[in-house]
Amino acid sequence: MSGQRSVSSRSRRGAKRPLAERLSRLTGAGGWAVLCLLAVGVLYGGGLGVAALDRPIKQVMLEGEFQNLDPEALRAVLLAERGAGILSLDIRALRERLANIAWVGAVAVRREYPATLVVAVTEAQAVAAWNRQGYLSAQGELIASPELPSLAHLPRLHLNPRGAAATDARQALELFHQLNSVVGLVGEQIVALEQSAADGLQLVLRGGLRVNLGRAEHLHLQRVRLVSAAWSRLQPQQRARVAQIDARYANGVAVRFATAAARIQPPAQLISSDSEG
Image 1 (cartoon, rainbow, N blue to C red):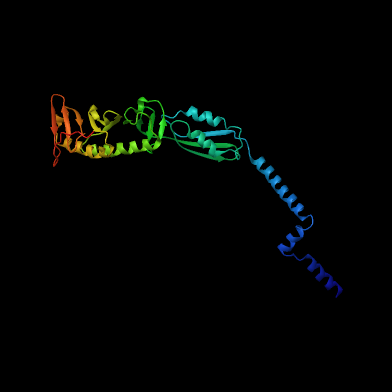
Image 2: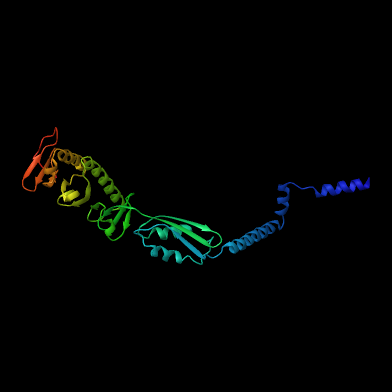
């Protein structure tokens, strides 16, 4: 019987107490100090573990195909990261430094443990030249760059001579697409948009033909529709003789031929001699 009581007693003493009771005992006199020491030990040990795993970068791999982007500019930034910790490297900061290089469109960075960094760069694609400051991407973002002969075929947007914000560049690109889609209906294509304080907006078609749309911005799209309607009424031999088109009129356009001037009336429109600017 005494043996049975001894076993039972040991069993009661070895039973696990509730977690709340055990924490209460630890947080008693001197308990908080014990917990703090345990926490410091865990953090210190974990820090040593991370430091041991944070191997120095020995190899940086650059991926991408570049036509206008200077790969040496990318390598100069990437070489500075050799020797940095593979885990402690600030990838966001690295992406920002690379994104500031001309012609960088997108950047993806990934770690390959234990000591390799892989960087994939996509080159920005230009769709138009902008104000002799560089080029615009399809999103209307400025690509700061000198003029490149390989991109001479791109349309030229010379607007807001005093300078323009990024939002203005996007608006100008949108306007170009709108106007180009209208003249495209009659088989033409805009190669340049030019703006001056005196004449307002002018568009240049293939072959160098200039069309003056004036300063009234809210009428530019309407006026280019009148130009397209008038252009569709001309025979090919007549089109070849057109020197300039002036659309700064209420409901018509003036067409100047290389040998004589003539006024062409769009269908169901009256010709007005009053210029509206």
